Length: 228
Ligand code: BV8
Image (tube, rainbow, N blue to C red; front, side):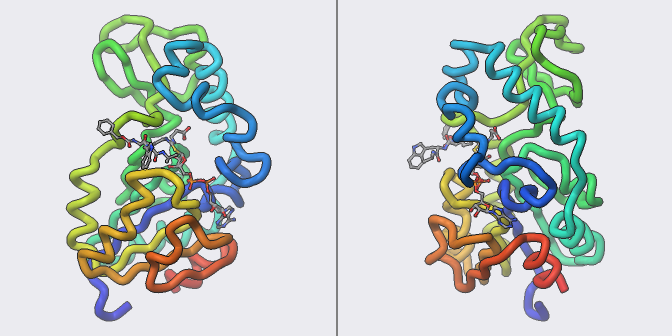
């Protein structure tokens, strides 16, 4: 990677699969267990907040029982030793990148271990259930919701992401089906801005043909090999 200075990595549910966290679209995945419209949209939340709280409370609990895997650890190692720009943009709402030791992480779809107050917009570190409507530590209202970006909501820090893509010499996509936008379009943006693009995934994702190179396999093998 001699001529590479600035790297953007995009991760999806596939990087956490070997830690025991369900992906969305693999067989038996989260979207087979629940209708997206019911649990991952603002309309679903206003229709049945308790159902949505139970869905996210179960995932928040599960995330605290699992560990990072060698793919998370390899990215954390890269983060520690890379002296150029590096941004790990994750679509995942787990905290496994951080628990592996990575620090340059951006959760574009929010985080399970955070609660957002629908009344005062404050975000709070949160590891307990939201079922039962606890009060917002800021404004005292019982208006806390999962701090997760649902379909139809604007992902976090898009300007910072596009700024990093404009400057990237390398864009690596790991463990994502490329089914959800705007994340699924980042490879095209990076390529247009002149970056080399690499896909590391169990199978070819929906936008696989946009990548200069695509390697199939498990993240716990491919990512340590790529980081070297
Ligand atoms: C927005 C958080 C605008 C919640 C999630 C038509 C065209 C283009 C766009 C749209 C459209 N219609 C609607 C849209 C917009 C919509 C969208 O893209 N819909 C899709 C379905 C077409 N997008 C949005 O709504 C986004 N917002 O557009 O806002 C806007 C503008 C102005 C003002 C306001 C708004 C917001 C989308 C965010 C939704 N939230 N998650 C939660 O986590 O519960 S989405 C969810 O699915 C994930 O976060 C992730 O982002 C996404 C994709 O999932 P993946 O991570 O890729 O997981 P998946 O299971 O799909 O794939 C796993 C992969 O891993 C597989 O390929 C598998 O082979 C691989 N794998 C498995 N095991 C391993 C492995 N790889 C390696 N090793 C292994 N061991």
